[in-house]
Image 1 (tube, helix red, strand yellow):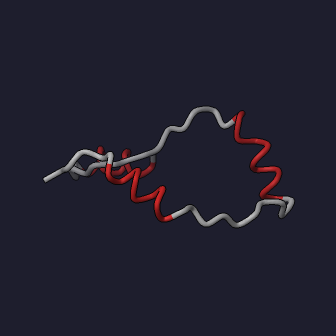
Image 2 (cartoon, rainbow, N blue to C red):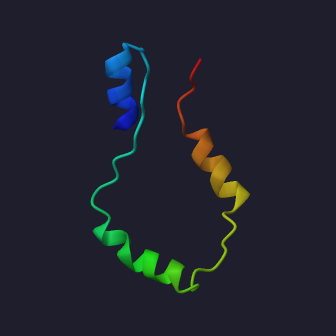
Length: 60
């Protein structure tokens, strides 16, 4: 917000991006597990990554 207000005052054209990701209520259990050191490292299978990427549209 501070950067947007600064750009408004100075007239500087700038694209500002942000991520709005719900209210976080459903993530609370994961945050608790993270803070308690109870999350396990998981290496996502390369085959699954490649399968997902293959479904993305081609962008010029």
